[in-house]
Amino acid sequence: MNGQLVEILLVEDNANDAELALRALRKKKLGNKIQVARDGEEALDFIFCRGDHSGRPFGHFPKLILLDLKLPKVDGTEVLRQLKADARTRPIPVTVLTSSKEESDMIRTYDLGANSYIQKPVDFERLCNTVEQLGMYWLLVNQLPAHISGEGVSAGI
Image 1 (tube, rainbow, N blue to C red):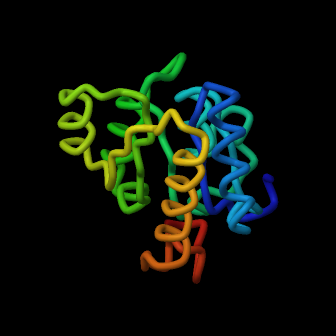
Image 2: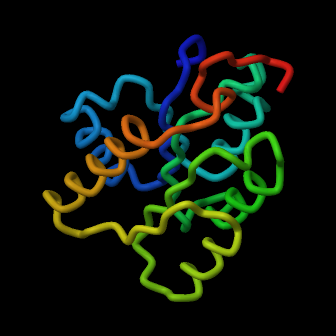
């Protein structure tokens, strides 16, 4: 995926949840340009072009980040904090997609700049419908600035 523009960064440590999300997106033909990060550190490395992703040109941001909160190495809240603290990555839409029902998690993520907070449905069909709707909205309906949407991307951003 290094040579292609990534439209969705799926940050999910649960292999089953990741596969269900990928299947739902592919079902609606939205799954061609997805990068999966299995922990928060990998997600940050991908976005900021560090570690295994150091060869990736900076500024080729995903159009959407689907972010779980309960992640190994670096939790989702810290990933969100770092993304929204950097002016270059702040505009990237982040949808928190988590199993947490905690009001405090919801408040904290919105305070940090999350664009949406969705509790993962436990039912397979509802999860597929939710992910499909997210993909359709954020990739096809929502308008993004050129440096996020890939139009006129410059490595100097």
